[in-house]
Image (cartoon, rainbow, N blue to C red; front, side, top):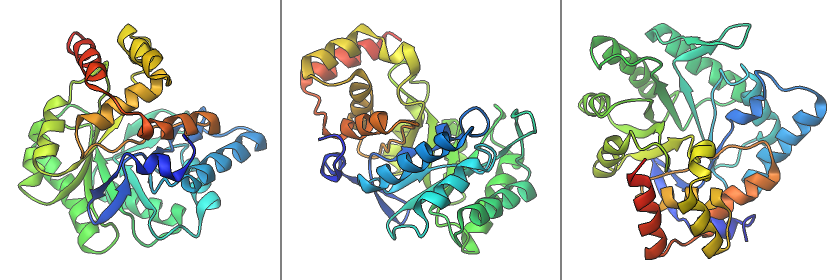
Length: 292
């Protein structure tokens, strides 16, 4: 069940700008390993996971040139190029890594443009499905944000990207951005254990913008919750599948990009599309989420 294209089709499809993607995708960040991949066995495993994801029907992959840095995009190209016509590759800009692996700001307009071009080159494409402006600080939206957004709008207008996205933002950022241009997706931290972006999700739903939660499983805090374990046991599925199914059940504009280095975990994650939450499960999980 979990590994078939049919299983992820059960979650349906959703628009990501001009693209139509299955609601369960794949986030490639974990393929970078500890800053970079190690030996050849790790590399082969990473390539196998990417190919297995696409073979199972995934047509939405999330990446970034600063994953590695450069490692993940190189793997995606080696594993999947030439890309399937329906494969939406989404990346993000706004950061870079130094030689020690630390994540640093790289978000001036010219730097954002440079990062977009680096992603295009590394992936071997002329155009990306979407690029997310990843905010790395907690600054309120203002002129600097407008200038950053303008860099992505220019790249879209010049045909380098199909859609402009945002990541790690507030509702105020989204409101200001949508007054200036069309936003196709938002990536924010969101899971059963952390719903600080509930207002952003609601705004995305209202404006028909894809909402893509990162860290969707919530780590141990999310998966170890008694409510998650209880629902998983009753439905005969994995706790991680319950956590992902809960997100899918929240709103039709939610797109998932869970990441893993393991084919077994990949199949489990994709199998979340086949998990049907009943009213009792929704009530149990809703109560647990409300007290966190």
